[in-house]
Length: 193
Image (cartoon, rainbow, N blue to C red; front, side, top):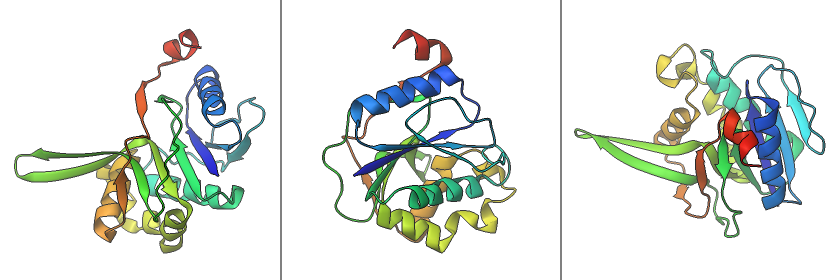
């Protein structure tokens, strides 16, 4: 019912393996896809490995990075939901109450700096309905020229996602059940097994 896509850039094997173990404990029947940003595939069993062979995440075409891992879900799963998680973000509990409408869901934050309103959804861990991913991929919003060579969006998935959600008036749900804990460091990844 849920596929988990973990994006891997340069995180150590111990961190990624610990996160896969945590995912397996919370979602034992789920498909897990490790989506690599042009780094060597890690020796982890019982997952789908997707390596597109490019370094995109921290370059000026991070929108392409997002488009590729969203597309990877559509290519590797028929599940109605995807959770995207980074190796350094800890899942705290499984989600049992999934949204029924097309949406992006997760930990939403709205804050103000002066009179300016800012919106973010936690980029290290958020969920998508399949229909929302199909809409994002079909419309190719993350392949837009505004995401290329723009320092505002460099390596900022949450900023790009929030921008597209607001610009296109997409459904975004603050989902209290999708909780992510403090970032996991390479040291705590081993220490908290």
